[in-house]
Length: 388
Image (cartoon, rainbow, N blue to C red; front, side, top):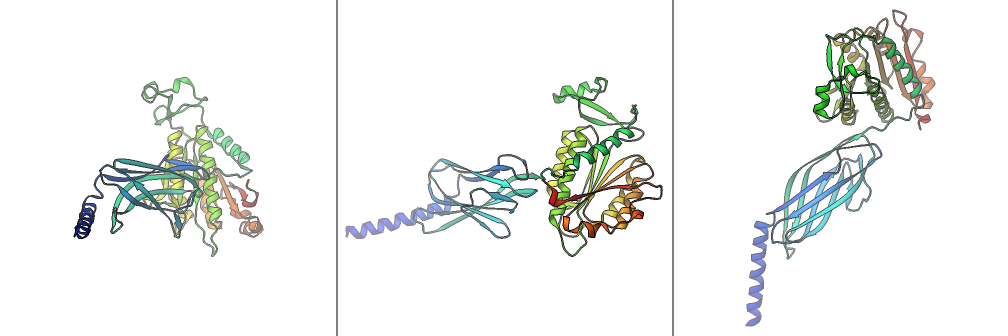
């Protein structure tokens, strides 16, 4: 009789416990996944933190935290990770009453991109492992993986030539009636240009910017189109890295930069178009757009974008521009020459594989790189096998 009573009591205890867990297991339970930083460069590492809190008296002997990430981020420790089209993480932990559990996962940004963890799934078991309990949590964390710097060995020579052309085109006096904005102070700025009010608000020196009659700026056209049967993603990625080099170096020299690309923003689906800007904030904006740029799928032709820019540009008859494009055609060259005009400086960097250098260069004769005014495109090949 005693044994029967004990069995009935045990069964009742089990049923009551099961009911309690079914109703209250998720009460006071929270899960969060967060990157320790907001941006890194290709090849750098970042910590991804998992934080689980159980703010109730019920223990969770087995709790599985599940979430997914794109494959451009790699876990240093791949335990509990499976890879298919994405990376799926399944971490099993035990959470006691009123306990917080934090885990740190080291990750490496192996590929440029924009990565986020938007959802977390929780799977728990009750004390007797009789039922599976599930919940879904919204999460909000993201990481920009900026393109690395290009190892193009000829970069210093090309940059110095283009920067010299910018300085040649600069007028000695700015037009004080054409206010353009405020940017960070550089050592070459005279003190009379300092905006003391803006400097006091931000805590760092700021200077006023004015338009010149001949605007001193750089326009970068970044082409991600590939019309051939074979697609070479590495050429496009190198084009993006080269764009970063020029954006950072010109802005640090005080030259405003405009970025135009037929690549689209991963989050908005819009083509990349950043109006001229200077200062560290503009560098950051450009790098975020390069990180979020999608290079797959159908994109508009760069020739069309260049002609559209001809219609919207300010007086830039002596402006300096840079086209970064692995795709080559006579039509693109003619459109670019028309954009540059009689006195503009047109520069074209072409990433290629060494094995295709001779074949690609046959597409261009002297008439392709000279315009109606006698102006020409300064062309430079970026041979991938020579990158360091």
